[in-house]
Length: 131
Image 1 (tube, helix red, strand yellow):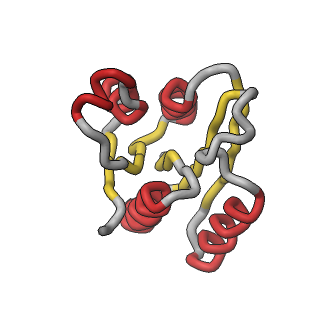
Image 2 (spheres, rainbow, N blue to C red):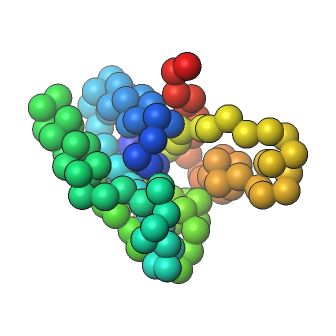
Image 3 (spheres, one colour):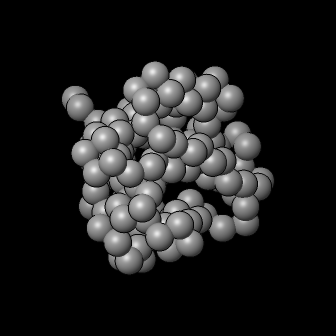
C-alpha cells in the first residue's frame, strides 16, 4: 500500500510531509509525495521548484523511506488530482496540510482540503504547521 502526501513548499506542506513520513515508517509502506498545479500556474507559490523537490528527495533518502515524488501539471485543480491519484494508487492514507483560514474565506472560496476530505475513499490525516 501507499501513503499519499499532498506537498506544497510551505510550513503546512512540511508538516504534511513529516506526518506522512511518520505514518510510512509506522505502517512500513511506501510514500508518494505529490505536488500539483494547473498548467497555467507556474507562478503559483504552491508549485514546488526544483530546490524544494531536491530537499524532499534528500530528506526521504536519508531517512531510508521508500518513496516516489511526482509533480503533476494539469488542467484540474490540486484536490481533483490528489483524489484521482489516491484512487489510482490504492492509497491507504492521504496526508494533507491545513492552513488557517477564516470561516468566511472557506465559505466563499471553498477548500481543497474539504474537497479531499469528502472525495477520497481512504482515511485522510489533516495536519497543521506548528506555531
